[in-house]
Image (cartoon, rainbow, N blue to C red):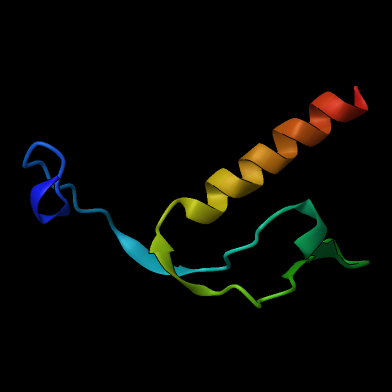
Length: 67
């Protein structure tokens, strides 16, 4: 593909600082029901929805597994 473009189409996406490894085992809840994120080893700029997609996938697979 010339210039690393597929059929001349280029899509821009919003990027932000993302956790990079957001799943149920990286979220802690304290005695006052406050949420805390842990394990920031993979933090970097990525697509704005990356963390939400990863967390949603983790929740879906855990719900199917424990049903």
